[in-house]
Length: 304
Ligand SMILES: C[S@@+](CC[C@H](N)C(=O)[O-])C[C@H]1O[C@@H](n2cnc3c(N)ncnc32)[C@H](O)[C@@H]1O
Image (cartoon, rainbow, N blue to C red; front, top):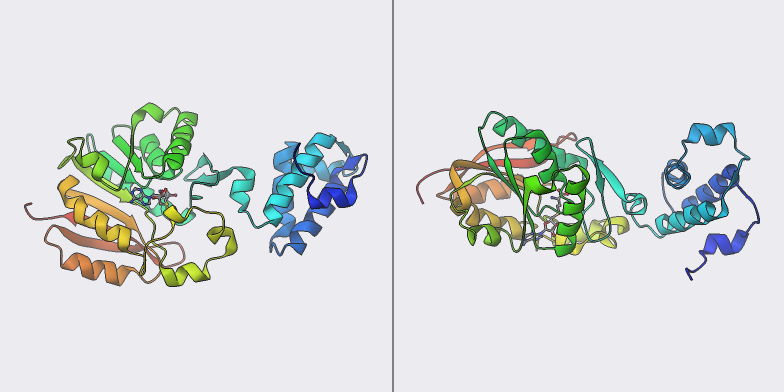
């Protein structure tokens, strides 16, 4: 039998009202140091009870089914342990899609929508682009592109088998599972071994880019719960991108493009390293909605 959470042991009432559940939830989340305790308590309660807060305001003393009450308390306890709200609720909105997330897969971030928007601008008039989302995670980028670019062949790859399972589940929910080719393995290796060299129009990558310095400053919600494989980019954060960009020209069609998401302060170093490459050039660097240089747009040049 599931363990009774601490908050329940303390209270254990025989009947439950929504206002009581809300008050207890806010207290528990505030004690745990959750800054947005009131808002998060509502989100969790609405999710479990399946009703919006207006209804709960109208009937604050309406009784709640004990099973639902216990479910809500269990989720509040998970959040109080600093597990990210998105894992507790099991989803995150991305580019207008409802993406299922679970521990084992990175929670999509709003700044990654920049990659999707730029890929769409570049590829929407292409007759049949081949697009690779390398390090697909939840599948948020691949699914957004497959949904918007109807003529595209989309390939999604990841080293994590758990991530690929969750990504496929997300694609199935939108009827896009069979529009995407799913490959497991390290960076571009699974594509090169399938004869796709020279055939890819665009590589879209949000690979791990957290440096070791930054790792120490990450909030516990991220560091203790999101997968290390999705975050750790080596000493300066660029280890995985260095390997990707060495292999990328062999996979790209002539004039094919690469769009990569990077972290704070990484743009100059990455661009300098590309300047030394014979096969890639920097087209531009674009800022996110906070003005932070976030996406580097590269293009294949020269003969291999
Ligand atoms: C930062 S997460 C991004 C996930 C998703 N693309 C997004 O934007 O939310 C990076 C992903 O890259 C995968 N990954 C890390 N190293 C990899 C490698 N060497 N080859 C393939 N995938 C890798 C991780 O498993 C993780 O799913």
